[in-house]
Image (cartoon, rainbow, N blue to C red):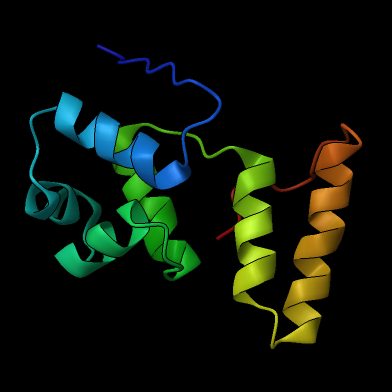
Amino acid sequence: MVEIFIFPGALTLGAKIRMARVGRHWRQVDLASQANVPQTAVSALERGLNIYPAAEKRILQSLGLIPDGIEHYQKLITGYQNTPQLRDYFQKRLELLKNGQGFENRNEN
């Protein structure tokens, strides 16, 4: 059975993750085990902190959530402020998304 969660737009990604986790009656350690990440990564993401993109992706996949693309790329741009090449890459991706253009490869980390 596929579970579908609909969230108010004003919620942060961390709040959405927490609501989806609690809705499944999972503790953070349960989600961490499902996503094969440390419990501290789940905690950090729920608090709005930056974690490795691959870990974030596994957490979201474990919950069946798709991140809000614009919010996700804005977070990456902020997280990579000191790495111009990555920051610029994510900025270009964000602009494409805002312009309604699709991406060639949707299975990226």
